[in-house]
Length: 423
Image (cartoon, rainbow, N blue to C red; front, side, top):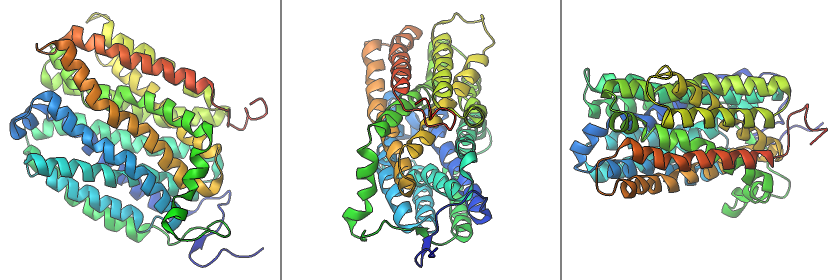
């Protein structure tokens, strides 16, 4: 059996690769930090509206700029990882996020806009890079579990970005200082990732070249597969209740709609990403144990629907205030299962591009619908302050998205080892 060409990685085996596992852990730390930066602006609404002289809808649009570059650069990151490997691609992404965080902390609107765009662009390397490293480091039988734990790190960062950052900027440091400190931490992480990551990249298919067109050629294979679109659309719809519903509008809904004290609203909103911390590895583990993907995906989506409807429409005091936010987050862990499916319905040599493609599809939903949802709230309010009725009417669209995600998930091919025979 011939060895892999110089500079390339041999085909993955069914054993643990410690070098890639260590690099995966550092990349997961990057994912934690960038996710905290993704969610932190949601608890800074009063500070940001004052600093930038904009209303809450305009600040929501500013925060949403992140998703435009995140979705586009997910394509670039996936292709770069497949062709160049992770050793330098991921640290470059981390440095972009660090610069973007520092720019956002300057407190000037144009710098913040550029900073938010850089944060999204660099963050595209976080989850895609972590999955790339996990795929090389872990045996395939643990892949869904590893992907679930990867997202667990991210949502733990999302939880910290709300539950931890809220009290921090309202009593310990200024909101600007938070962004500068985050930038410094990211710079250190970039160095650690570059040191820890093994050199090399996957062997290129025979006859391929290093031209720009050939670098993006794997996407032709991924995006010509209808199953890839089903994965991306179902996951994208399941992400909306967290990326838009919670991380941008969760605190305003609780504070303005339900008249909850601001600090308590931050705590209750943070239950959703905390639920992800539980749900992502749990549902990934259940999927691996069952050897099936679709039942776990659809079951998690159903839990999301029930929890989201309860948050929006149940009268106050009927259920514990933290319960349904936590359950919504746990159910939302199902949104990560299509990330395993898309790699299982596409060849192994395009796994980086497959992750990049689903990230592009998922966060294109968030990028396009974040301003739409903000304008919807404004139109429903009719020039008045946001109220519970406005949030409840707009929430119907989030619930409809979950229903559509379930329909699309039912059309997916079962890729779990115990379901392939009957698929």
